[in-house]
Amino acid sequence: MRPWGRATHWRAGCAIAVAAGSVWAAPVDDAAAVAALRARQLEIPVQGLKAPQVTDTYQQARAGGTRSHEALDIAAPAGTPVRAVEDGKIVKLFRSVPGGITIYQFDPGQQFAYYYAHLERYAPALVEGAVVRKGEVIGYVGSTGNASAAAPHLHFAIFRLGPQRQWWRGEPINPFLVWRP
Image 1: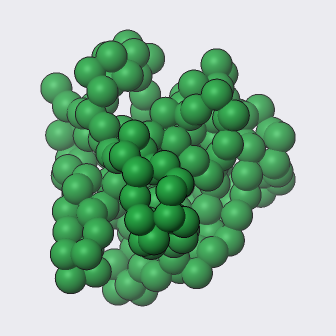
Image 2: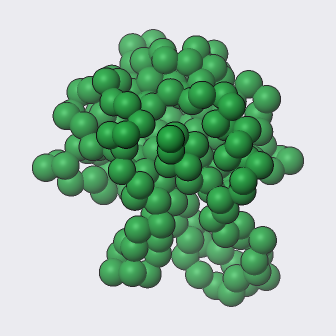
Image 3: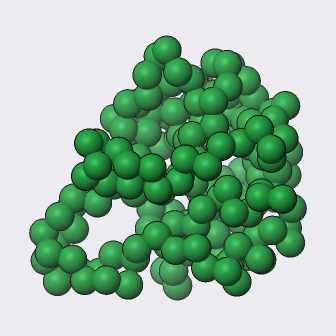
C-alpha cells in the first residue's frame, strides 16, 4: 500500500478521487493470490474463447500514459455471452460513464471480486444478490461507457478484497496470469 497525494485513480474504469493522506493499493501480481485463483480453474468470461486467445492488456498505458490499465480487454462481437468465471454472488449491478453497464461478482469466500464492464446488457432476471454458477451467462459483450462502438469488448478485472469486503475497492490482480498456460 502506498500513500498518495491528491490524485485521480482509475480503478477498473471508474475514476475515484484520492484525498491527501489516504492509502491506495498499487496493482499486484501476488503469486499466492494468482496460485489460489489458478487452482480454481476460472472460466474465460467470454463464451467461445480459450486462454490462448486472450491477450494481456493489463498495465497497458491509457490516457496518454497518465494511468495504467488494471484489467484485460477481451475483444468479441457485440452480444457474445459473458459467463461467470466461477460460482459466486452478484453484489452490484452498476452503470457508470467510464464502465457503462457493469457487474461486480464476489467469489464464494468473499476474498476476490470479479468486475465485468462495457456490457451491452445484463442476462434476463439478473439481480443484485443473485447466486451464480461458474459458466452461467450473466451478460453480453458490448461497448457501453467509454468503449468505442467500433470495438466491442469485455473489460474484465480481478481484485483481492480487503477486510471490509467493499465491491469498489481491492488490490488488482492480472487475470492473464491466472489463465496463462
